[in-house]
Image 1 (cartoon, one colour):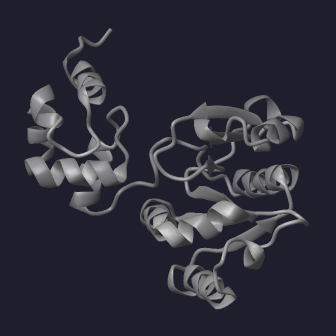
Image 2: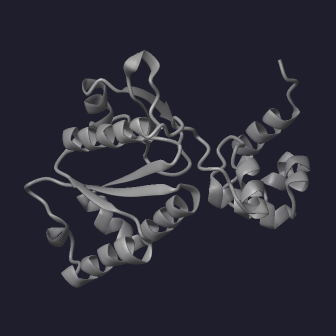
Length: 221
């Protein structure tokens, strides 16, 4: 949740948002920003609020390629208060982008709000997005929620706790943590796996495998 450091609000932003215009607008709003490689969501306004920001075009494209529901499912599974923010402008709206029938877009919006229970907020532009993020973070600060963390809310089940441990490794998000645990069977076996064994899991190459082994094997200083 929001941090009172120097009386300012702290928001964690995914590094991929660095050039989106939202980060600069957040600075202009007076917020403290930390750029991190967030495994889930684009902005963390507190330990329980994660916001996925979709520009209008990307929202429609993510419906077509199937990314949207996967991303929102992970958001829902890992945060108490997930939020979807759709950013657009006067020139483009959801129903005029690509050749997608309006009913398909309406159906997806209904599924997100009703089936997934995720609130949808609309913003006009990066400045408006930043203002909304600050407003959310301020409410969280007033509610005394913990400050943003790379780790999502406290896991409840044993499997969630296991995924939480593995997801703390470099470059490993929740989906990949699940793949590793399914491959090796336990947290201990994942941590004992060699670089060669780790590379047999999809999306883990030599560099990522080496980083994981370095974290596990390096002496604590």
